[in-house]
Amino acid sequence: MNIEMLVVTIIFIIPGFIITGIKHNFNVRDKGNGLDRTIESILSSLLLYTIIAIIGNIRNNISPFFKITFSGQKINLLSIKLLLYIWIIILISVLLGWFFGKISKSESWGNYYSNIFKRSHYRSVWNEVNETVLKCGDGGVEFKFKGNNQRYVGYIEIASDYDSAREIYLTDVSLIDEDNNNNLVPLNAEGLLAKYDSLDYIICSPGKGKGNTK
Image 1: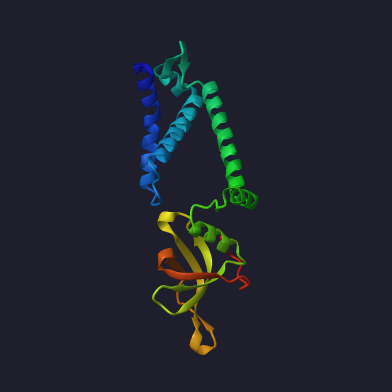
Image 2: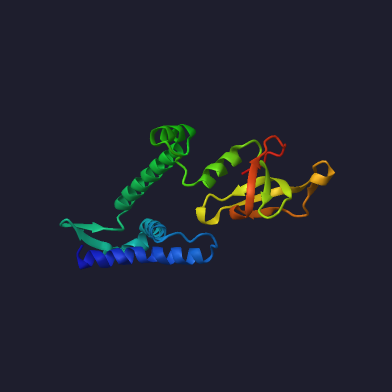
């Protein structure tokens, strides 16, 4: 890569990093790793310059600064034809990623993988149980916290599949009153956020009649 191409490439992607940096400052979720941020920044730059390429006046003014020589040919990075080809490639990549992702999450793929490698295709037991619980009945579970003999029932609304933040959010949580024929005593709360490490066990209890798991 010659100096001309390097400078133009840097100028091309810098706005994407600015866009991504500002966007993530408004977002409290996981910031992602360096590769995720780089890909997002490149896509942001590509979207920005696609919009500029469509707007004729702006494109005509800055277009001369985005010409590079590649394999002996002059290429304009703001060429609508070039940008169109790039977006088509990205779209095909997204569709292929979605297709293979759906296959990898299918039950048939899981059985196929397990039969060949004699092991689960999930990253951890938590992730496997996570999906099993979410698919079980209406999301009703019984659970108990470590160091506490009291048992609870509730409904899983949200469950994290990140190994670094294994948590579940439950609603309609009730205490099982063992001294009163196991009657349910509702907690005075909108919901309960529980960390995986704080739980002694979770029992899937289908058929409790709510059916609003996400």
